[in-house]
Length: 278
Ligand code: SIN
Image (cartoon, rainbow, N blue to C red; front, side, top):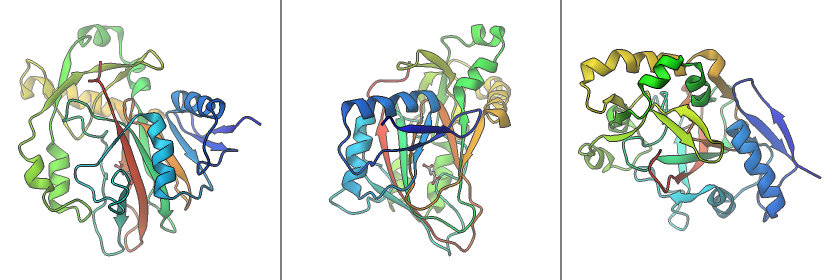
């Protein structure tokens, strides 16, 4: 039986049924899953029962696992799996702003995975915005003007977050504060689909290469507003035991902090780009 893929919105997102991710996948099954990922960009597998080694075995199929430089691992035997735990007493959450991961380094994270362990009774959704659709919406003039231009991304908003985040390691701020900005193409092509996307990280975008911040900012603000158009967005409501993975290269995401006084625990793993974005 092939997997069942249920599309969740016009912009992206699908739930997948008929596969147990704790078991070894056949090549055929993997091909179906990878095709669904390329098409829907954020895929979710309800009713999974996964331990950290299962998460690692599956996520490794998407690329090189990354040890998160700032989050604490679930335990020392599984350094690739990190816990995102928001206690009822915590007021801020991790990832509570539009971003894609680590654009301030040369090889950003290419995919993120979350496994929902404990979800609040309401709230705690993750929102996504589709950067392919944002690129497609640009005029031919803008596409031509910014073809080949690179955008500098800096630690900016992430640095502000880690100052107050209870889930990151204590040395994070010191470690991050001297990281220089990284330059990536404004329009990035995703090899598996051959499609271009508008690769902008709202929390990190600083300026276009060889332009000042003052010159760049109005256009960056325009692009950030564009990527957030409702028709490019999708919002996933987590339930316990759902495993999800999304393509960080062509999506931005936002962890919604709307569940004060409730507990949310997710296991998280990322894979990293092995080449610089092109
Ligand atoms: C993140 O990876 O930024 C967090 C996403 C979430 O917890 O919903």
